[in-house]
Amino acid sequence: MAQKVQVLLLDDIDGGDASETVSFAIDGKSYEIDLNEANAKKLREALEPYTAAGRRGAGRAARGSRGTRASSGSQDTAKIRAWAKENGYDVNDRGRVPANIREAYEKASA
Image (cartoon, rainbow, N blue to C red):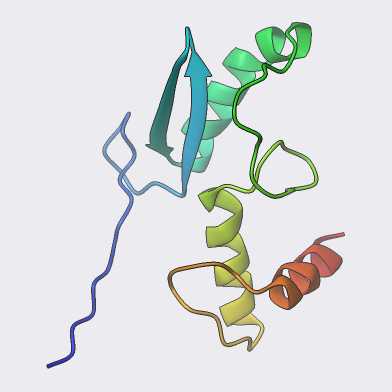
C-alpha cells in the first residue's frame, strides 16, 4: 500500500498559509515559527536594528548559503521547489534540493 503524506505549513500568527519556517534565538533558546511572507518580513524588520548592531554568537553555524541571508531555510527551499516545477525540473517535495536546481534558480533570479 502506498501512502502520500503532505505537510502544510500554517502561519503561527494569523492561522493562514505559511510560506516558510523562520528560526531565531534569544537568551540562549532557539525558536522556529511558521510564517507567511508578510509576517516573516515584519519579524525580520523588527529584529533588524538588533541584528545589525549585534555580533554573531559562537553557537551553531548556519547551514548553507542563501546569498542574502544567513542560512538556507525552508522559505528558499519552497520557492526553489515551486520555481523548479514551473520550469520543468523534476524535484521531490521533501528532502534536499539538488545543487544544480539551486544554481539554476539563483542564476534565473539574478
